[in-house]
Length: 169
View 1 (cartoon, helix red, strand yellow):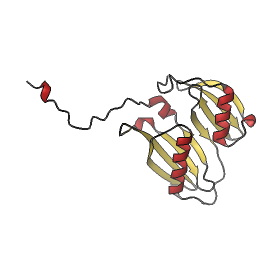
View 2 (cartoon, helix red, strand yellow):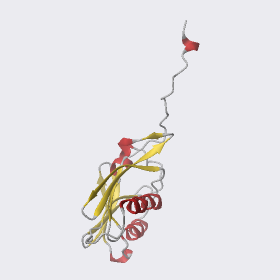
View 3 (cartoon, one colour):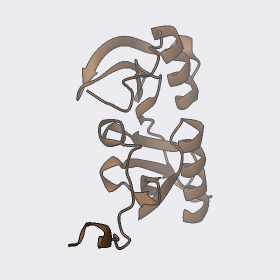
View 4 (cartoon, one colour):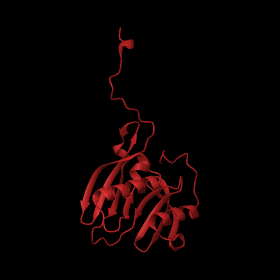
């Protein structure tokens, strides 16, 4: 089970459908599915329309995954613009204080891996991955299961030298 979402309020299928529709850019009434299923210990509502799909957590109503394939034939966006789009997407969907630490350009898409920064520490075990189409500037892939499973807000930076004089004989 995800400790990250444990204390969050549950959302209804209708609310999850709205969140999925907004993330995919599709009217919620056009989405099929909505079944509640267990994905790696997290209950999610799963929605789809044609080749597009999104999963929303029951607890907290967080966008957990998205696949929204589209043709990407002619580049209209740079990698830097794509990174800005990716950052804005993360903020819009509740993934704050994220830092990109890996970027890869593949044909007409940019793939980014972001990790949250908590108390000055980059949590590499809590990554999200997303792809941005350089033709449309749209997010075509998003996966936050590692983030949901591993995120911790109680991380403390111990990189400084500890003062052990008080416990020395």
